[in-house]
Image (cartoon, rainbow over the protein chains, first blue to last red):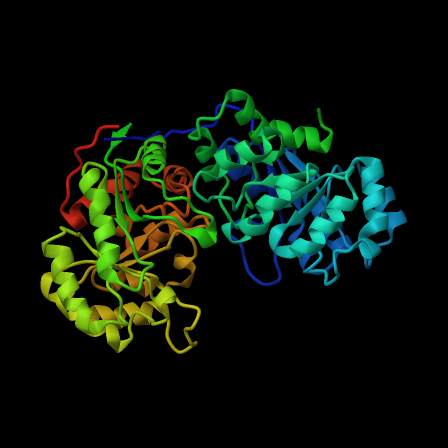
Length: 251
Length: 255
């Protein structure tokens, strides 16, 4: 008979690297409020989450970032992430606001924001983020892989987290992670067979981060899966929270 | 907690284009990690169904306590289909038919499938199929398609694959009224509340746990059911109870 734990709760602290918060223009998601997000976090055993505004990715970064801050202000458990648009946002204003609000990461969205991810477009921004030790989140579907590889390689002191990596991205994402040590992977869509163990063998346990892609996906299944992967407690703790804390400079 | 856990939707073999290694020993180890007693396996990627079904039968023969065979036939060789169905179900002991219309570029209500369905209907054998296809026009919905098939072939239990990925959002509530419809849970999308929505759409007696192994990791797929906001009784049915009834099988494996 199959042995399953219907009352599962994680055995280590969990910090979600990939949650979007707020209403969308093109659909009504089942959870679009901070209260609903916190409720799901509690149910899944997730204590903290990096949150960004989907409006900032889909339409206007500045407007979305401000909406996010207003939304999360009274709540504990959210670590806000700003979305930047290097082809529209003013870098001086953006960097000042990031410093003032102690924002710890920036998400870039080249394809939704309709710019090539090339050094002559984003170089100045990346130099600033390198200097401030601000990690950069990029969703795998939102960037050209060849452009990403070239830019990451030319900015070895910047840390890039590749989010929402689906099995369709594996042909390029795995070689990219292997060849560039300043890259990290977020696991929300990385559900291919034995994927976590393969990653551990390939890049070690310090560049792998739990993320859920909530509310498009549920939080708990990947946490459950990680607990069944025969990971050492050190790797499980690092993947579920420690690596993200370190990347954000929160340790 | 102990409960029968049967993966209704799994495959075999290497999938080079998705960098998937189908090593069967590792496959069983992952089943053990996930708490899965048995997996219904198929091979649907070849043009020759006879070779595909033989590969499945060979693995089941070596691991009869862990795998349940599922059959495949191709609509592009209708002259071979019926004899292969007879061989698959009455010589190789297969339990249901899996079809993959996306891959074969024919929707599952194409007339080329009708002789296959007529045989299955006569023998009351279940069919699992993808529910939507990239080549579909806007003129038919998933619900309409399966209503039509269910009316035409009323003795086939129809299983819609990947309801746990994107299916429920595309299904109308009337699907509950369609005779012999089941929803299977696997998918790379892990859409939030897919399991809860599936239960709401058709009831927990008609939802079947699946993994899509070895493409997707069984530990994540079972996590979607284990962590769903439904009752423990519903989880037990979905994890194995419903499949045991549908396929009339028993588990004799002990994890």
